[in-house]
Length: 131
Image 1 (cartoon, rainbow, N blue to C red):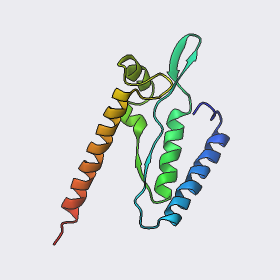
Image 2: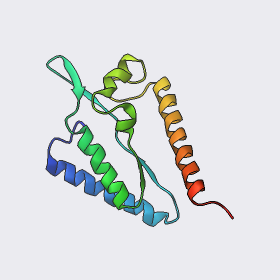
Image 3: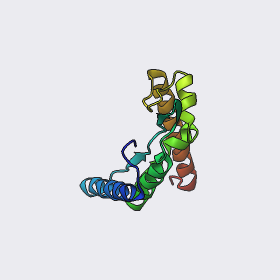
Image 4: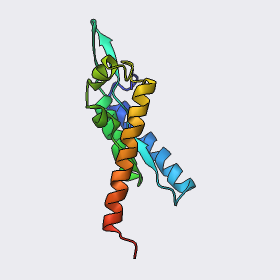
């Protein structure tokens, strides 16, 4: 995240993700692949912390690459609360401002991911009942 500063770099990153995801799909054609998008990360500018400018664009690029490659996508940035959410996570002891989760934050993210997978599985079983 800290190194993406232009739309040209972002486009290159998106293409790189797409190529990576398609290699995974080629290597394991029957596998289901879940891409977990980037989480929020803050930088300090003039004594104030805020999200890196390209965090949202990177998440969107990861999503486009994942879906184009036939992978599922989980939007961690939205799960956290969007831009500048890492500041709340940090003040709650769930993460550092650089985006790394504390053990407590890791457990919470794991719980939220599990709940999402179960919810989507339940929806799938309703739409595709076993005869």
